[in-house]
Image 1 (tube, rainbow, N blue to C red):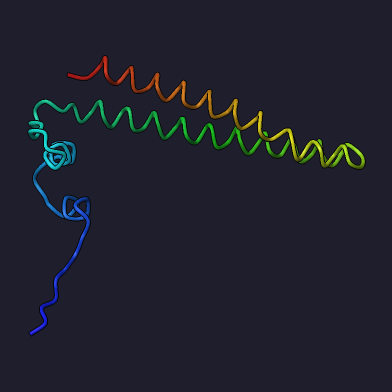
Image 2 (spheres, one colour; image 1 turned 180 degrees about the horizontal axis):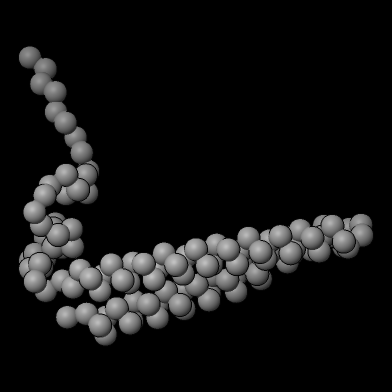
Length: 117
């Protein structure tokens, strides 16, 4: 007789469980001992997550403004030079935005590590 088996990701099973924090359960799956919930500062983790979200929203807004400026510049510049602006200019802008975002994200993580347990 054929038996049906439900296959789910470990993260899905973890998300469906109740009563333990996600960080402790995930570390337990990775072969490490579970982190006691008293050792995890959930308030500091939520604060760091909010800061990361604000940072991501700011980076996305800066990207939208930068791309709008590049499109405007390409429309103003005549002929093939406008296409060159569209072809070459976005890459340095993306590189700078990515570098600034990573630097600020690492600062948020460092602040969280110093605030944590």
